[in-house]
Length: 162
Image (cartoon, rainbow, N blue to C red; front, side, top):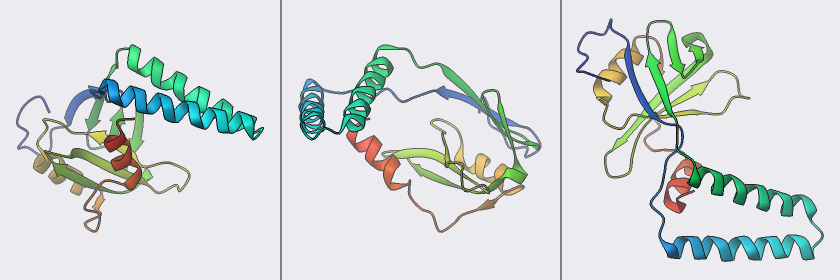
């Protein structure tokens, strides 16, 4: 949100990096490299070529992400739905949402789609006002008040810095 949004009629928008850049120590890279080499050796020795290919592809993706600048993605919440970059999602496609706002851990919105084939959409809110975001979204979507934390996979990715 570029400015304080007290009027629930105005769309809310902000930008965030496409992927999070973690500060990784030399020790992290050594540990990740050793684990990767062990997994690759196991895959090759056991003849599991698909697993070996997956290990190599994960290493390549992590290398490319580390050495490329994350592009900024614009996120908009308006009366039609939400827009992530060029992709528009209507409220009729979204089942519910929940917010995790713990400044020391995570500041994100999670959108669950009605279609079970779509993954949860996770949007960082960083410096945005979570009260304004929640108030605006509750006009159109049900808030899942039972969810109080980020999904396990998201927490593990943050902890492991991957």
